[in-house]
Image (tube, rainbow, N blue to C red; front, side, top):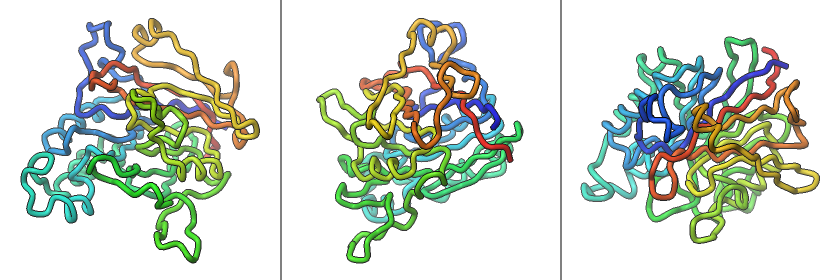
Length: 303
């Protein structure tokens, strides 16, 4: 096994990090160095090309060999189905209509590739890293329908588990069972885990929770619910979650909230028995970039 560092962020909504001298904010330049950077979506406010370019500049500047990016419900122009069904002929619907092809090109062109950026849609991907580690990741930008935003599905639709023969909705890319997946990267949270809104409601997905229980990845990173920022270690046998305690003062100083679940750390993760859940939303509920990136050290198989 090879110790590997991940930097995790989400819901940046095109906000650039504060200057290094602004020690009142943990989200400041430079982002923490890592082997892998994960961005769990909501790259923008409403999916304009200018917003993507601004977020792209932040990701390009990050010190990581691999930078994995997915979309979120605010990234309207990355969802072709949303553009076709909802915004057709409505120039006033959540801003100007944008080209899906142009939006995707920003994240998949040669400039992005040269910076180590990989834009992923829903599905399974495998990577080998420069440190000699490898991992398998499942990614999905989709969340339960939420006030007419993008990448939405109805709550009764289970897109994360193999569909039964009688099901009207057929999952095209279900999450596989343990031990196929090391990292789960979704925009939205599973139900009941770091998903509580300011109104006290749990906004996560029940079907995603069931699928994660089958999958039991090492880490599940997401965002979407800004108020849910934090991390929990979940023990599957006991069905119990333990909050990861962090020092706000230390996070401000170090520009990140650090968690070490690798061998040699205080509590190595037991793959298959535990999962580390991380809500990495940078924005708070008032859309202020008040939260720190997460930095997670974990063990991955050798390539």
